[in-house]
Image (cartoon, rainbow, N blue to C red; front, top):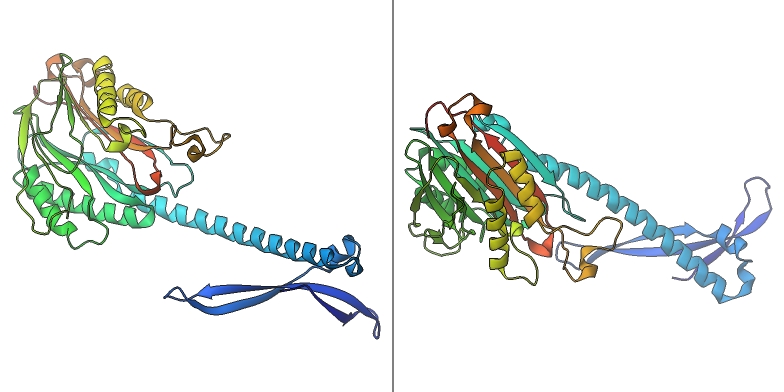
Length: 382
């Protein structure tokens, strides 16, 4: 609408009138069906602008300037409100995600260290998750990494439900395949859980065996102490809720020796645009092989540094301006280690470690990265 002019009586001088100008703004408000339900009418006084630009007598150009000024003020106000709303939502989302990820007390006597690297331009929350639980019977633990499609509060909520379900199922299941069967049936009734991927491993330190099962997840990597790399890919099945009729999931096992390293990850750690996924897997394997003697904290940092595609610095243009050659990625990494005797007060032959890392590519390529490491004393030889 055009700028409107009114003669307004001045409050200081009765009977004295002055010209004042307003720019009306009509904002449509959509209803639940997407159609316009109502229109909010508001006006912005632009008298000072009109006077500054030389008065209304200079023609329609002054009026257009006044309209642009009013629209600019409105946009500035809306942007400020959006930034405030985004900050509030991000704060809530981060608190929700932190509450849903495992606390350090949940890993028993293991020492945990976590690093989180936020995505650029996102709520900094996503559907990546990890879990590590003590299993019933024997000297065993369950280590899992999963990825829910999407980002933000919805993905974080689904992530929390699936992680909790897998934690409970792992404590009572006979093996990882049975645990995933339970979670798969549960995912069928959880909105947003379709196509979520997860891999879970049961690590038996007494028998030196890793049992594993994967629901559409990239295969874990077992780095043997002598430098051999083994991809645990003999028990891979479709993602959760990907099939109309649930079927029993496969399970496999692999042996390990003290000092071996097990890495669980999601595709964000190894995947890059315009690059074959095998290249990323080889990069991860080579990084682990070269640095297999490092302690968990150092190993976790090295893996992220070598494998995580770094985002453009904040002072440069957004990553999309580079054609996604340098895109923000998120990865979650956890390292569990039974370390050498000198650092744990145990014989040197009681050393083995498990490293868990995860990262994923989600919708709109908004990613973050997290790294966690866990360490546990070895009361008996492993």
